[in-house]
Length: 93
Image 1 (cartoon, rainbow, N blue to C red):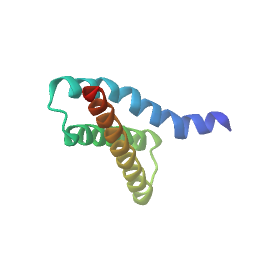
Image 2 (cartoon, rainbow, N blue to C red; image 1 turned 90 degrees about the horizontal axis):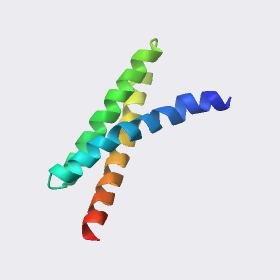
Image 3 (cartoon, one colour; image 1 turned 45 degrees about the horizontal axis):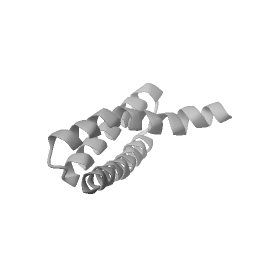
Image 4 (tube, one colour; image 1 turned 180 degrees about the horizontal axis):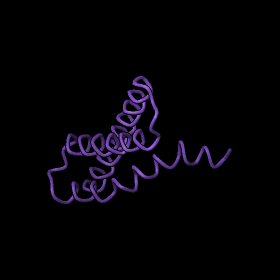
C-alpha cells in the first residue's frame, strides 16, 4: 500500500517540482520576474506531465482525464506562485 501511495500521489508531485526547478531558476535570472512567467511555465510543465501520466495509464475515460489535467493545473499554479514568492523574497533581501 505505501508503494501505491508513493507512485500514484507523491511521485508525480515530486517529478513536477524537480523538473520545474531549472525552469524557475532560468526565469528568475533572465526575466523581469513577473508572476505570469512563473504561472505559465508551471501550468505548462504540470499539464505536460499530466498528459504524459494519462498516456502511460492508458485506458482512462474523458472525465478522469479532465480531472487529472485540472488537478495538474491547480498544482502547477500553486507551484508557480510559490516560486514567484521565493524569487521576490530573495530579491528584496
